[in-house]
Length: 138
Picture: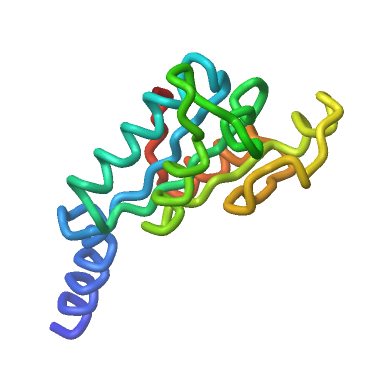
């Protein structure tokens, strides 16, 4: 009887994360700021408006890092910094690919203070997916 009870507890513990009250974990991947940053930030905001408990990380690489640079503006002339600050205040993490920074001759000091750095954006996305993060590419 104790073995059956222990087995049931084990099964329930394994299945609990799949139920709706489990926190969503999502990685948004931005590789082209001009084409996807504005819509991607809007998607992240809408995601949090609908599911405030979601754990969201935005990983930027290639031309996608541009929106996280100081003084970067969207196609309407609005600074990305405002949206990034608001989302960071809601718990969103922003990560910049160091391979891109080096490859493009950029400096970490050129980026918003809300941005952190990861050695490789693509590797980071893969690791987050292995940790159970859903992948979204706006």
